[in-house]
Figure (cartoon, rainbow, N blue to C red):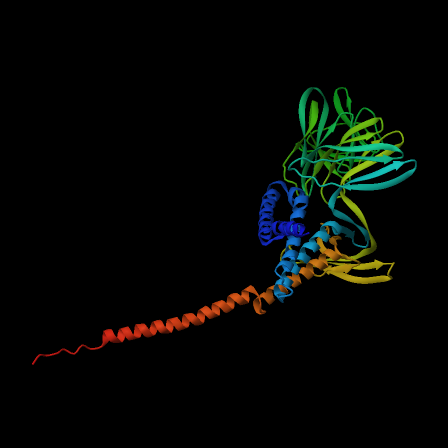
Length: 501
């Protein structure tokens, strides 16, 4: 028994002693510094994956928390009534517990509402692989959290049982900020470059022969078969023609010649001409007779606006598909469909849709600008909180530093639509984590005050010693001055010459 106590005491001294606490603080500071460099070069997701959300980092914080509690017992702070130190240690433990609750129980998202409309859901800030399965006349959904980073290797390999048949999904590769390029090859296919312009800038896409694809809301069909509702492009007499079942205008950029084409007429495709379908405008930039599309990374750093390309391998029984899914962190993704004889699976990457137990109705969005400029000075959302379960129908105003707090959800004014008829609200759901963390910070402040003003603390002991040294110093200074003054008087006393008679 004595030997066991000795072993436990030795373990406690090694892992939870004062030296261990110092080591944990040093490792924590070093980790934060390394994470800053990783985030700067590769993005926040890389820092989260390898530092903040890594198991070793969580273990480090857990060991530090136990060390704080162990030191309270080891140094008998309670029995010696060192209340300042007790409060200080307790505050640090509560802050770490609050961070853990936030990590595992809390989540954040964004709610978008247009004026006159209501919303009862948010899109999560975290990214997921979202699945929607249609099988035997039924539909069901599920999702898998997926944190991707441009640093290191990304992996995802899961198998599901759907209708007594296994379905596997595997991540082959991830391309951050993908950009399509055309490589000229002998066995290639015809490819057309199409350019769209918008307020966010110029975007280029490619249409390959035989493809049916939607780009910026326009459904293109590059094929000899004419498809209803599409902007059809086809070869005729070795030249490219187009046909659409709607009215389309064409403006040739070099001559500014303008033509309005009636629906369902065959027309020669013009390059460097602006086409307008009434909803979108685009230009066909060029034509490659034999080419192959390749996807390359434009830059490695991943931020909130980055587009990611996920090459997935989906196995539906005897059939295997390989296709690239595109999406951005924190944004709803675009679904890619994988179909077999008895089921269809839609997979997207991005934010998850989270339902709320109540809804918000946007009555009005208000914008104030600085006088004489278009720069926004402040903006606010006038909303109505509708909670049928609790019979609540209340008007609220959400603006900077004025939040709406209801049902464990906190709504902050975040952004707005370009036409100023819609609002974006940041949403936080972290009741226990937030409140425990705030309590920890309050105790931390109280502990620091107690260290300065209450007795039986190291600071007070140092102050008393300094006071004693100060008193002793004054006495020594007085004695030293007296000695100097006596010496000066002896040296300055007049010397009376003696005269011998």
